[in-house]
Image 1 (tube, rainbow, N blue to C red):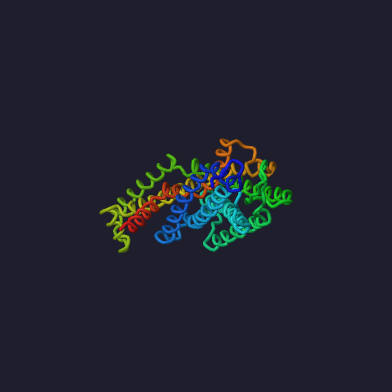
Image 2 (image 1 turned 90 degrees about the vertical axis):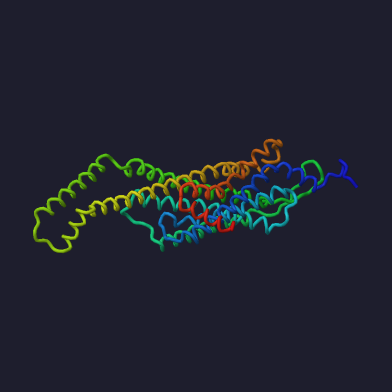
Length: 368
């Protein structure tokens, strides 16, 4: 039998709100496909095709792994809430997804903070303490442990809860805050958001110094170019004079002088060393700019959800009093943090030409 207006049940209530979240569902599905495939490619390429212990690239596979898992878990959490807003399956799924999603968000931010410290050391303090491989592994382990510690209390804050329709005698179930945990939830969210904001402030501090150094101190000056030119001229004059006046020299010096006459070997070596230094400087700048952009995108993605978390904490019925249009806009903004897990592969591709070449090779090999 067809349903009449008088037989509005939990299924209809669920479908009504699922339709409200349709735009968000489509967007999150797109995020899932792009983020899953993009980060998987990054992990494959950086761990198989680019296995060198290049200092600038060391943290990329770890960050990509966090982004991969974060994209998968966060989009699953949002899609499930969008499609089953009042028919949520069970508490175990609700608790697990919220705990893991929270941990991966914290891990992403803390890992970006570690990267900002490393960029500061390399660019601003090149002759000071630098992270070695053992130190980096230890730092990554600490980041994951801290993320797990920050996320663990979430298990006590979310579960499958009953929700009563404001007008009809209908009871549904959604993944939401556990009753009577409001005070604990407010304190906990305040601590987590405070830690994340402190990380953002520290990142801004470190990258501020990095940016200043890149603009002012690492740019070749006119005096430096003049010094290089004078050095080359002196070497040429010295070589010419020695070849004319010196009669008794050892075999090695004689060979060096003949090589200087024929091809200017010392100048070539100097040029080669200069090119190597310039290449390393350009690489350092490039990766610093790349990680600065990644951090900026991360900050922009996380700020709107932080605001909504605060609004939801203050007003438990925040989402119940919105119009259809307001719900569409706010639910999209609420889920923008997932974009942080999606865009990084494109940033890697833009800044790292070697990565682009290897991605092309991997895709070509799959297409054969």
